[in-house]
Length: 153
Image (cartoon, rainbow, N blue to C red; front, side):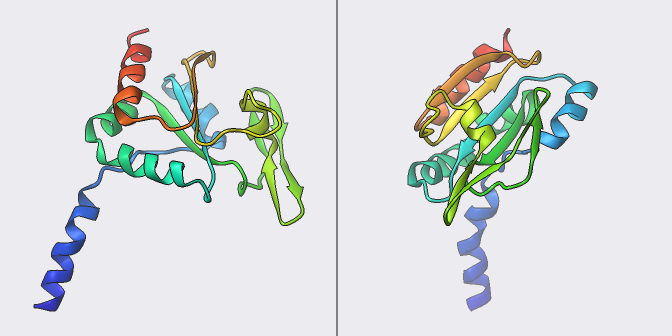
């Protein structure tokens, strides 16, 4: 009986939609096969707003479906990603700073070069041109509205 109750308690977790994500290294190949707009989501593990936003977005099935069908999504942990990344013909690396650090690509993508604001959402059209930039909390409703506008382009 206890196992059944535990199972029922965990069912809502399984019902949450999960956004399909990719990596920068996969992006070039994916774009050659099927060009789509790209969403780059910069976040950090310590950002409580990032966590709340991720939970809210994953609960919104319509937004998750819209992203999965019409966009490439790259979730990019700005302060823990340490591998070199090729993007737009340039190579970006990790910049250590004592026990922490930040990835050069996070700084390059952010308008605030000294201290990026998290979460940060960047949307590029299928030609890799910037079409939307948003710092801070982005609700599923606003995201869905913006992505529908971008999909119509």
